[in-house]
Length: 256
Ligand SMILES: Nc1nc2c(ncn2[C@@H]2O[C@H](COP(=O)(O)OP(=O)(O)O)[C@@H](O)[C@H]2O)c(=O)[nH]1
Ligand SMILES: [Mg+2]
Image (tube, rainbow, N blue to C red):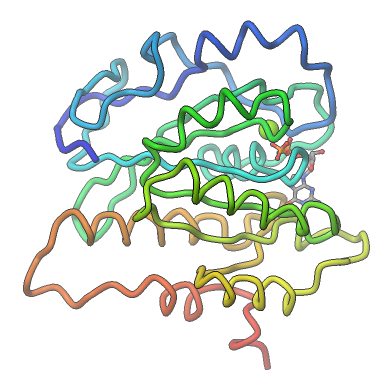
């Protein structure tokens, strides 16, 4: 975590990743908005206590790194675009290459929390790029696609990776994305809930297309990280699992 009032950037891609661009053929993905300026550090992610980001005028009190992980095509980039820009546009030929990040500052109980969200490419060939970033992540959002059984089956492999490379106390959340989809939901909500329970993870179904539970997922992470970093004795303890269960729309607890 970093704690410094500093201007924010909109994000940047890592030079090493661009070298991989040629190897990554185009595929369907949601489009991104104008690409951010070259404010990423040359040798990996910004250090936690070093305000390495510039440009823009938003200030923050605390900053955290969040990683989006999961198979290719589950909707990581779309989820980030939905959260950052409130948009969903399908069918453009832009793909995530290696790793990329965007910043967003949230107001959490009067504290400005900057989330620096790292969007990874799920392809095997980029795994080595991604591994280097796990250790700096304060939180990881692990996605599968409710219309893809294989993306769900691979969650265990992703969890193994996370256990191996991420910090042991990183905040994790499991998200079943594309819940809006007209395609058959081959992964039922109950399957997601069961897996999440097995691993002690908070869980929600999301839609980058409609925005269902997208802001909530990031807000929940921001609240948890903020609470962990700024222990205010008078503040009631934030309980991530309870918050997600209570606030998540479409959760089985809240259906009629
Ligand atoms: N119906 C639906 N399609 C989605 C959703 N999220 C992503 N997609 C589509 O799934 C494809 C892959 O999305 P993308 O964000 O590139 O996946 P990534 O490889 O995990 O980053 C694109 O064609 C998106 O338009 C969603 O919530 N609902
Ligand atoms: Mg992507």
